Amino acid sequence: MPRLGGDVVELAPVRPPLHLGSWRAAINNSFVPLQIDEADGVAFRGSLASTVVEDVSVFEIRATPHVVNRTEELIEQVEGRYYKLSLQLAGSALLEQDGREARLRPGDLAIYDTHRPYRLSFPGPNHALVVMFPHEAVDLPRDEVARVTAARFPSDQGLGRVINPFFIELGRNLDQLRGSHASRLVRSALDLLVTMLSQELSRAADGAVSPARSLAREVREYILANLGDPDLTPASIAQAHYISTRHLYTIFSAEGETVSAWIRARRLERIRRDLTDPLHAGHPVSAIAAQWGLHDAAHFSRVFKAEYGQSPSAYRESATARVSVA
Image (cartoon, rainbow, N blue to C red):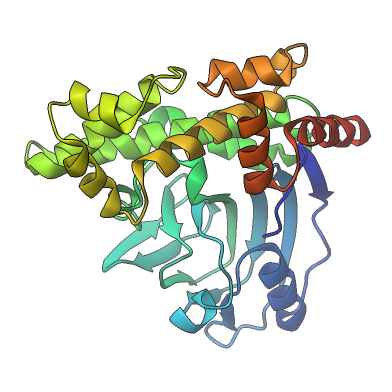
């Protein structure tokens, strides 16, 4: 999926039914590369509606029986790391990843990671909502999320009673995902998803979380609660948890990252959201950055441009322009 700098950049109406070849091209252009095959000898037909809000893609899919595979070979073709949320609206689906299976019925949702192999089987005509978003959009460690991939979240249990209907309505109203409110709406949806995943992780642990995993979660929660503190440093974080800075570095190295990089990424994501939020339209860029702990304007501008390919001001202007067009 290309890097997107604005609020809403595409809204595609439901197309006439596509044959398999055209469907493969449309899906691979919209998602990550996938292997798609017909099922049970039924000639394939499918239609697709989509909208892209910043770096989050939302798709409504209707199709005849088919099978989708994401293989190791296909994973090597792209560098980006994304999660997908799949919400079944009609028909059924079987999602397989990480040694688990989720049998989805209407109203059920599940998530999966495009950076690891998975398989999706649709045995009959189906209608689904798919949301694709980068790993960085979720404030949960990848190893934590990996514990709940291909887990079924039904609409009649727990938080699913509240959250699943929200996504169902999102799928029914893709045309509403335009204009200045679209970014807030999609981000709210992802925040709800993180809440659901966090609850499932806590429930699955049931008191059996290892001390190391528990500490890692506490450290990240502490960082998120103190992102706006300009004095938030590895040393202050370690001190707050009565551990050495070396131990703190070990916690993050297990995820293949550094604590400083994790903090910077979270801060930049919050700033990027605020730059496109109409509620912050009257706030100077420097004030928004300072709110999230980045007071050095020159340094902030450099790291923001390195991450998003535009200066903060240019990013905000392009987002405003796209909203005006939408």
